[in-house]
Image 1 (cartoon, rainbow, N blue to C red):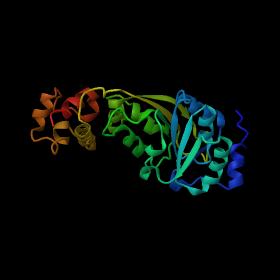
Image 2: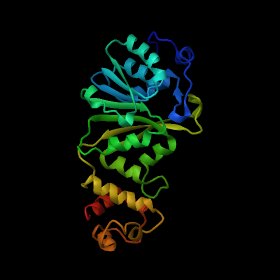
Image 3: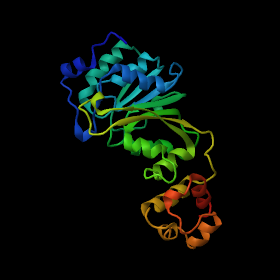
Image 4: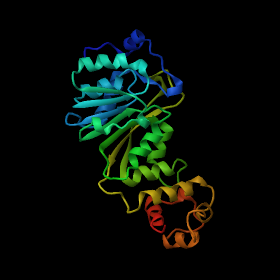
Length: 275
């Protein structure tokens, strides 16, 4: 893989870029691995790609080399802007960098459909961004796929099945409106500096319609209450949500003595329709 730009280690040395723990930064320097992530995102030549936290630009370069029509990169740390400007110069008109916090920046004015999102998400904002992308009021969403890197523990929570320790709110929100798949894992030593945990890439394809009918806000409320006290039986955990909790559970065909992790997505959707 050669795009005529210097190796990432050299870029980091030239611009004196150390990873900042406070911003959840860990750099993936192996361009073969960033290319693997870019390829997992799908066919990019007809798409704009939104990337959050590009850092020194390893994944950015891979997305452009894989043919992305345009990459919109949102970077909070101004130290990386000169390195990203060099990539923009090598790919004229195909990379736009916005300096800012991804949680406070609206990317939509800068994107044209179809849009794919691909990112090695900063650990400290990854889950919050994912939940925002999974829970817009209008569905299908503005994106046609998500290919995202998380800590392995978070990735396992996204694809978890009922009955497992990892199963909870994240699994239900992800699986209600998308098909999430664990693509591959990345060990700590592939990063600089190495994090304490293994990472994993998850690919999400949105469904045209949610898997089972439910109102988003009601489903979120029921799921949050159920898993907020996951050791309790649902008749106790959901006391503040329903006037007649046992009646609502029975109407949804759920045993009042069941616990949240035993209940599948379809049953939670039935229960939310009792609200």
